Length: 312
Ligand SMILES: [Ca+2]
Image (cartoon, rainbow, N blue to C red; front, side, top):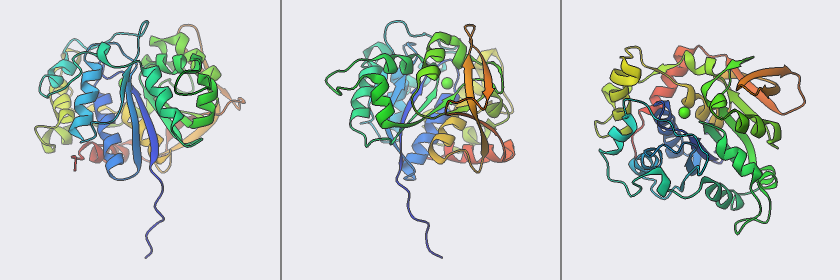
């Protein structure tokens, strides 16, 4: 049998709030696994969260997977600042050497986005956001600079093939990533010039992972350490069945596409002032959201297999 023609790796920028919840750590494991399989190329990892441990944890995880050259950026000024009471982020960061001591030391995410995007082939980059939309609003509103003569909206239109979002509830509802910075969410989806794919909260709700990871991964693995600590302590309780895998679903869909895991329904999202979202069926924008196709238990196995990937 002939091998399938090798696809070019999908060029990914990951935008994460890695601190209020720990599925972001799982999502980074999935992304690094797909990169090591040749399916993805990680262009940058940026934080949309000013919480001090975010950029250091991005550095720790990128280093663990032997990709220390991946640019790291962070939101500046008015960005949200969220962690969890159990301080899992700092607990894990403290176990590894790292140069960035706090998120404030990372360069502005907008400079990172613009410098990376300017160098990409046209219509090639995929941005995955698994946090707040603050950076992406700022990117769209950015002006020309030393990296590109294009303003942010034109740069995105030229370079970004697709935005994939863990956020929203479909067909309507209220979800954390969207409502924390509702005005940025509203602006971003109203002005984004290329297709946007949403993995709503209802998708990851049914995909539980972590229990195999904490038994089988290396004890030195920061993703295992995140899950091992959080499955006992997160939000003051234990999580014996594992954790919902919202952020991993967005990364998987960004790299491999919705199929065969999910179907995609097209239309248009509407974000309200209070951060709730609605769906306009048949709307003219190029928006779509995932609906279940493969049983969630089967998707969980595929995601957790990727989370168990160890660096080469
Ligand atoms: Ca997240």
